[in-house]
Image 1: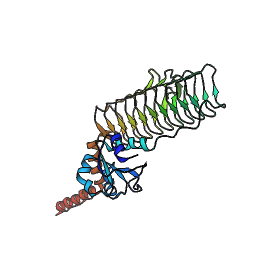
Image 2: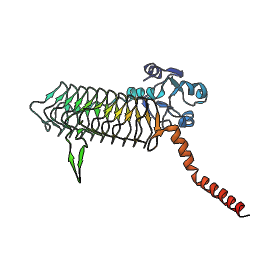
Image 3: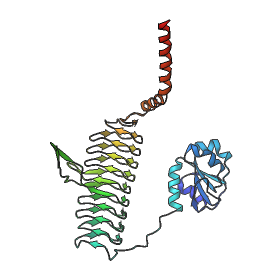
Image 4: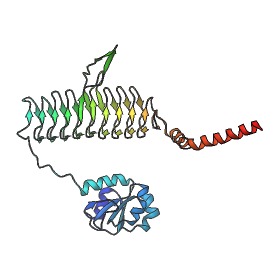
Amino acid sequence: MRINELAKRLGGRLLGEDGEVRAVCSLGTAGANDVAALLHPKELPEALRTRAGCLLLSESYAAEYGHRAACGAMIVLANPFVGFARAMDLLHPPSESAMQGVHPSCVIHESAELGEGVRAGPLCCIGNARIGAHTHVSPFAFVDDDVHVGQRCVLGAGCTVLRGSRIADDVIVHPGAVVGSDGFVYAPDGGTSHKVACPRGVIIDQAAEVGAGACIDRGLLEHTRLEQGVKIDNLVQIAHDVSVGHDTVIAAQSGVAGHSRLGSRVLLGGQAGVRERVNVGEDACVSAQAGVARDVPRGQSVAGSPAMPQIKFLRGSSLFRRLSHLAQEVKRLSDKVDALSES
């Protein structure tokens, strides 16, 4: 692709000479026919040295550092990360799977409804379910009875979609994920715990994505729900009756306990935990490994365990690092006071 054409497709402004590019590479490995991107301030020294044929960068970086760059051309973008993602789509389109149709080793219920162009890989199992057009069911996947899957979805290898689940169009469920597993609900009675059935389902709205090994429990009183555009990383646990607002992003190894609510566009860092019946307001940001035990207001950033406003956590962390020095200083002053008292 010509760099000039790429700039038009990305909605950016071309600085420098036109040329041919074929791939997106890192700043350090890119050559004359490659595209690289400056996405983080720490990458600036390497970006100025890169031999990429084209560099994607922001307006501010182009204005301040563009004249120092060694690359032949630059595409200036309002959002270089989005431009990078689109460049990846253009220069590295996903290869079409060689697998077509339904493999003869699949086990499919006689009443299952498979839309036009559905692909089902070897040894997958589809119950009395409805699968939308052009959806890809990968090898070893299991789709239970009373499951509806929309169009153009991808169910990864070995994933499980259990009874009562409803998956909208353009959803990706990565390998090994479990959608609709039983909720972890027990009624304590002395020394025993009585299991409480979770009869509701899981609803996943359009263009959501569920990472590899993630688990989403079905609901107890209400359906567990992921709204449109939710992105869940690998090994995430979403418990029963949880609601996740649209375009929320949840990083790996995080957990959200039962009956909690995450608003729209929430960012949940890796290994963060949200206690049961907690509401996290829209546009809030929860730092990695934070433990959220109480409601988080809209737009607030929190960190630590128990979670607190991020600025308060950072001040406390700074103080914690100085505790040894402060303890020595207190001892020195205490010894000085004792010496004065004895004189």
